[in-house]
Image 1: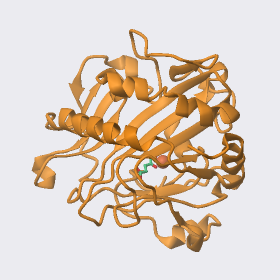
Image 2: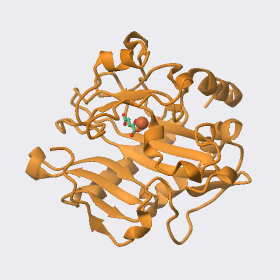
Image 3: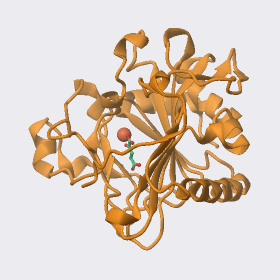
Image 4: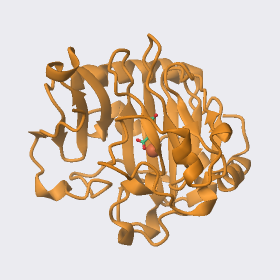
Length: 289
Ligand SMILES: O=C(O)CCC(=O)C(=O)O
Ligand SMILES: [Fe+2]
């Protein structure tokens, strides 16, 4: 990472996003890719979507997709020493410090794959604030949250890279894709939906990234991505962090700047029903039908 982290923070506040080239060092990227492959194989043993605490896998089953695909993993730090340490690497503190300070909790740890052939791999345009159910658990949820997306595979327009509307964070919550059942991976956003909330479809930016590059955005930044139309996967790691001293959600990542491992038991993060069932279980929702 060669960019000045203060400038990155200013860009995030001004434009709603910033790209950080070489966020993860080239040598480390090969390890990250290998660990991601390992994780995909762990997830693929499950016939359908699975949860154990905050650890969760979104699986497309053979029955409906002809073949089994993994499209999302959540909180795999619970089964991977590598990813438990990855989430609190010094690179994260460096870019987060000017935005959130040095007491930082993590509320989301995700990898999204877009396996070629899996059909439903696009995400309609939205603002991530829709995924924070417990607004009261944060003093200033919008200003105290930052998401960092890291390209594990190269992210291109062809394989469904993230797409962002610059400065779309300035006009509050716009309700994009909240219609219908609100499922993001079914259907595409029409240009008229963007126009209806005052956004110009021509302003959409394809965030193309090399492996190891990162993009940072906020809870009000309008973004989405198209399905993968290529023959290569798009593994993308998303981590959301919040200011630790003003947030009652999340796992500690840094305390007074010190990298902090997970504790014995999971904390409430994004999934509010965590404590309803802490046993491993399959999830029978067939939202993709
Ligand atoms: O993986 C992507 O392309 C976007 C995912 C996303 O925006 C989300 O899960 O909130
Ligand atoms: Fe999102």
